[in-house]
Structures are given as structure tokens and as C-alpha cells.
Length: 227
Image 1: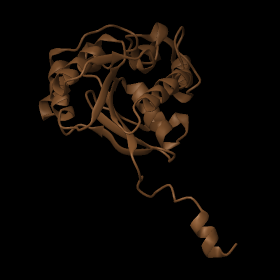
Image 2 (image 1 turned 180 degrees about the vertical axis):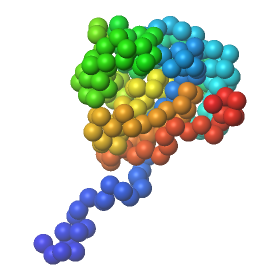
Image 3 (image 1 turned 135 degrees about the horizontal axis):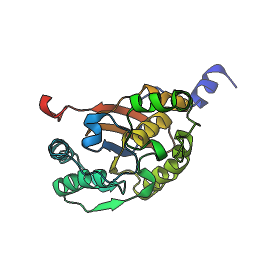
Image 4 (image 1 turned 135 degrees about the vertical axis):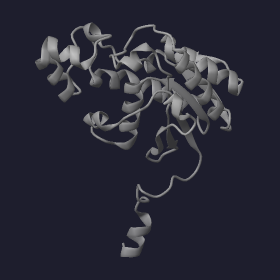
């Protein structure tokens, strides 16, 4: 085969813009709760949004209403995400669907604690957890375990809504995990991703092509007093 023929047969470089119809996942972090302001680990609790969190969710809903071809609004089953999703669903005229796979990581016995409190109680355990995605809090779930339950939930959405836009209302850790997975980055890259409450991230999944991340932690819909 000639060099030209070989070049023509090679797949397109991964950095080229995706072609064809993609399934777009709009990944939304829920609005603030009292744990957000206090910087406490917030896993499987059922805390509601604060007044600020509801204001953030309304601003977020206004941004989502500008999107086109929204096929579904899917949320984690936890209260703070369901409340955020309800604002969005009202704005876009869709019902909310619940998917358990998108709920936050289980912090076990560390639920509701700050990093300062955890460091004082067991610095070695905190260091082990902070340094390895396979380490889990006592009675909780590791980030690696989260990845295993999260991918089937994502793949179910991709199979169910090909070529459409789906809004997924979830939590900071699952969204970071979905972004890292879409980038093909090592699992521990999630430690280097920051997401604000009520932020938006976007991943496109073209048919038969690698995924493409076009936005991380978008907060242009939030005014200064809502950040």
C-alpha cells in the first residue's frame, strides 16, 4: 500500500471536531445546601436546597430553557438533585426521571464531616482516601466503585436517546467521574477537577467516535451573589 493510501485509510486524529450526530449530555451539579456552605462531605443525605440553592437552580433553569432538542431531564434520587431538576423540568416542559446510578458517592461514617474534623480524628485514613481512588471511607464507597455503577447508568442514557440532548442532574463526584472518563484520563484525575454548585458541564458522544468535552464548570448563568 502506498503512503497516501495508508494515510487515507488511517482513522481521523482524535483532536478533530466530531462529525455526525452526537448524543449530548448536559451534566448539572445541584444547587447549594447547608453542607455546601460549611464544606462538609455530602453523600447520601436528604438535605434540601437552601434559599441560595433554589435561586441558583432557577438561574440554571433559565439557561437550560435556551437549549434545543432536549429529550429528557434525568436526576439522581437524592432530594437536592430532585429539587434542582424540578426547576429545570418546569423551564423546559418535561417530566423528571430518576436514575439511581447518578447519585453521589457514599461517604459512610464520614458523612457530614469536614476535612478538618476528619484529619483530627484519623489523619492516616483521610490521607489514604485522598490519595487513592480505590480507598473507601469506613462503611462507604470508593471512587473506583462509583465508576463501576456510574458507567452503566450513562450507557443506558446514551442507548436510550441517540443523537439527542439529555440533561443529567447529579453531584460533584459523579460529574467529575463522567468528565474524566470521557477524556480517557486516569481515574485519579478527578482530584484535579473543580465544580461549583449549579454548574454546567457538557460532553458530546458522537456515534462511533471518541467523546468530546466542550464545557467544564460553566457558571455564566450565576450572578456574583449566587456563586
